[in-house]
Image 1 (cartoon, helix red, strand yellow):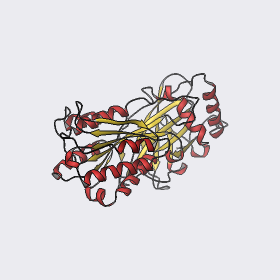
Image 2 (tube, helix red, strand yellow):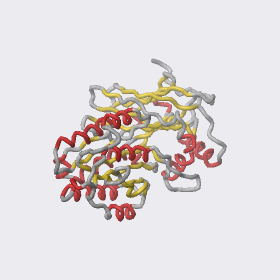
Image 3 (cartoon, rainbow, N blue to C red):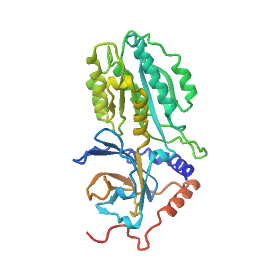
Image 4 (tube, helix red, strand yellow):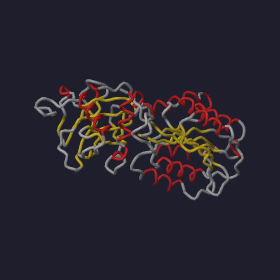
Length: 364
């Protein structure tokens, strides 16, 4: 099962990257203390639509163990009947799609000593804890014409990444923090390459940045306001997880906090970063690997148009209170590729059409 899902996402890449399939939605909150955000919609295996979302509770931790009973689906304003089994939900942890992370490490002289040792420790533990298919890139903030140095492009091999980390030294004289983060965002926007002949999970469904440093910024071409505006205008969110280590003025840490809060990320306190770095790494990986994907069967005829849907979460179960997020899917035929047709047929076996052709509730 895991293998065909990985291939399904890979071969749907050409359609997945269309403007309608990569959508940033506004987050929703309610008094129950949780939120979720749709960050990608795929129609490459139509009539089956895949909706990816990330969730948080009040402690900024993902909702766990979401299942069929927690989910509702609407298409064009009409609710699917749960009894007709026209959708299912899975955690990314149990699928083969990859996630991609850029580690941005402050290598300026102000980080010398214990702060830099801690930064390398967190970075190495993050690399050790990633899944085999996940990709990590490394940017060092240090003296150069750009204000940063690309230590590693996206790489899956943890040993190769560890060797490149070992070469880093805190020898920079100027900290162009915002320029480095801006370039990390550009790297996240690059299209990954994949192919239908590979079993490797090359299709990337989310990107994030882990920023480790003291928050000091000097002589960046980008201001904090300009960078935050760029973050706010992203169509697909790139959360920034900030881990502070510092021996300089603590007011600089507000720069890290502002970037994390504006990007739907998490800012970890300095005390927590010092006392329990392993737990911070586990928390970040837990967030990244607890995204969910809802797969539902659309009963809209192929017409090449965009159609509205909504996915709802009822949490906890059986409360009768659904929070909905919406988007659009494309009613398009998959390209005439044999493997794609096989995957659609496999999904057809998992979500067969109801006998009457009607997926919706028949009553109010």
